[in-house]
Length: 235
Ligand code: ADP
Image (tube, rainbow, N blue to C red):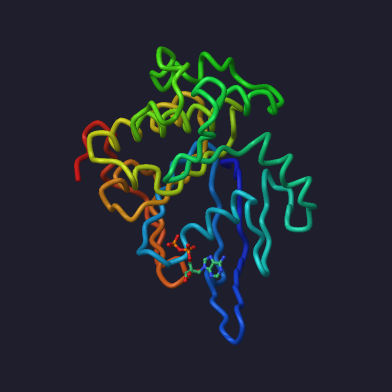
């Protein structure tokens, strides 16, 4: 039996503002296995980010349960969830979210300093080919380079789960492919489970399984038959 890293059971997330309630995700159930690469496709507003944020404990479902390594974390305190994230979960966002006043090295060091057993910061930056640029500030790096620093920052803690929300959404194709190659490598080399959100169907060729979402629901989950390498993708 393959090991499940994170599992959602019947999760709903509703937002209420005045008289209006939006159900961002509706009754989602899903299990992500160790070492899997999942791509989540769907139009804007279909609930992808809400789903990812709930799996990553950045957000709580209105109802339903989330299990991390078989432990039901639905009732954990904010402090416990934050400790779990620090230890086990890496995030990569569309707009990098680096700290502008810190160099590439310092951005990664800051996360390493708060991790239980990080890899050497040098290894994380070398892994994304940015060791030579380590003393540069985010404003001195291109978008693709900043995203690679964000990947180094996400992997330095040696997470079990890497959650990526539109990691290539702000990048041109060539740069996007380089970022995907970096993600592909860390996924492969460290057996990290990866969930990657995109509205770009081409990127789904990287996945082991592809989830399609619409209107807060999972339309389909398919095993990917046309597995491709990032370097062969183009859009
Ligand atoms: P996607 O990532 O697919 O674009 P989201 O998960 O961001 O979709 O959003 C799903 C739905 O939930 C959208 O209708 C969005 O407007 C709504 N939504 C998301 N976050 C909030 C929030 N904090 N407050 C109110 N509505 C929200």
